[in-house]
Length: 236
Image (tube, rainbow, N blue to C red; front, side):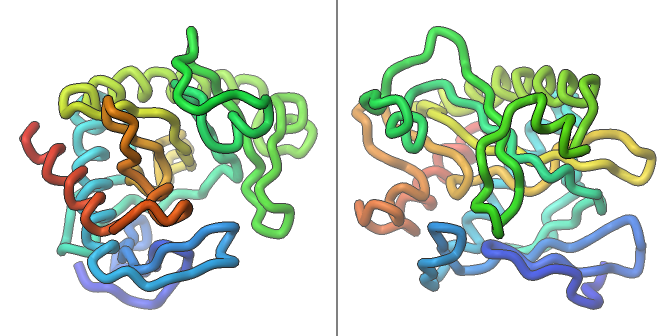
């Protein structure tokens, strides 16, 4: 399957057409960004690590019966995916207090939530991805109430699978962002990626194993991501 024209160039990956109109190739970049791209740095090896980690997680989700866009890994930095129409929502699931959630409510980071909390954010760089509720989602025509219920149910199911995977390798899944889209049959499937770029992972001792290492200048991002990959590969 060969790459053809560039469809989209994002912060973390480029998306290419293939000779099959229903399939795309995602090529992961050696780039780290924050503040919606206001700060950018090239980090050698990051694209490979994000691709391999995301491929591993999506493969596990596929095996668990979660419909995703992932088909297979093509190279160290490329994967073959189903083409989807992305729903402009970031679905955030929080298992522990951290990040903007802690700042918003004046809470210390690392507090286990009695029940995971799910949030929606409107995917719009121009608006800085604002927090929105269910009624906003319906008003903006992003999704109807049935679709909202489905996204919530599927996200919580995914959470049970993912927390089990990371617990098995000694990591706490603090929070993360998911994106969903419609495939060619109109089914809602999980899309985008799942890597330390869009989740928080901590050791039991509270060491950050995710993009906060870059955001907060806590150390070598590539070394941290390599450790996450090696831990996951013990589950093969």
